Length: 88
Image 1 (cartoon, rainbow, N blue to C red):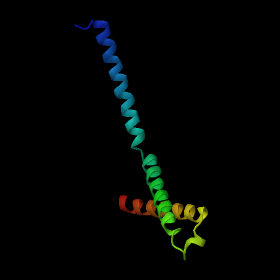
Image 2: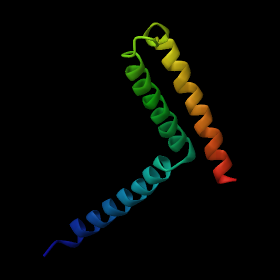
Image 3: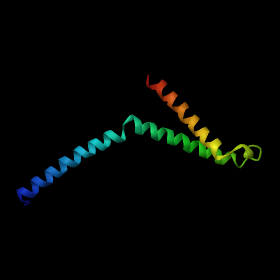
Image 4: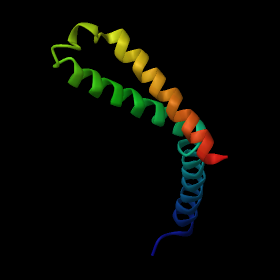
């Protein structure tokens, strides 16, 4: 058997953990975090497109880090606009 003092300490610890997990879940599923993840994924897509296009001889001189960055920012804004349209 577990002594009452230890059992009550475990229960209190579990309640505190559940409250902090609830807060963590609230933070992770907030609109700001979702927006950050969405924009980051658009930036990753831009990097992938930039990487593939740098292998094409006709486009290679025009593909730079700045171009890929601007493309990622544009994709992020476009995805934000689409998301806003879908939510309203």
